[in-house]
Image: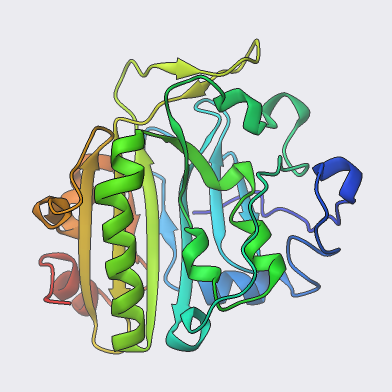
Length: 266
């Protein structure tokens, strides 16, 4: 299961190269409370080829960071209709994460000229109705992985818009967004080592705990047109088979079996 739960650290504006609130990471809330909120049913990585070298606890989401790829493997968050209602002032500055060892602190400049967008795993859009700290957290580089521009700005963007509508309709959802790598990934970054691996796939899992229903998507890190995102619908079972990850292992087995084998109509 998850290891190395990060201890909260307050960053200064100088370190971040941007003016952000104090208490950026957990705002004084305990890791236990935030894990229960954003990762209530667990994720079992014991049979996956890549591991969580560092699990990062934030007020907006939980992130699993891998030192080999120098990217997050997934981010998990629980969001309510109230939290996505309205819009707050948008935060726009990417921030390196000082909780990581220095050699793994990816900076926004590592993506410059790479041909890839800085793709959010926990999207900034989910924090629109929340506070500036949650906005800023989605711009931490530990929540970012290389994403093809014509996926990020088109098909993936329209999927995330759909998720916002589903949250407003259903009231509360748990969402896991992740990336997956082939055996010989491309690498980017102006840094010497370690470079940043480019994922071959992006996936998103949406779970409605009140109805015990889910819907999932598995997209190649390639151009996907804005009207094509629904074609990449799949099941949690199919994603588990590809990745070796067991999602929602703390759910009762009967509930887990029912909701993971098919995607519901959201």
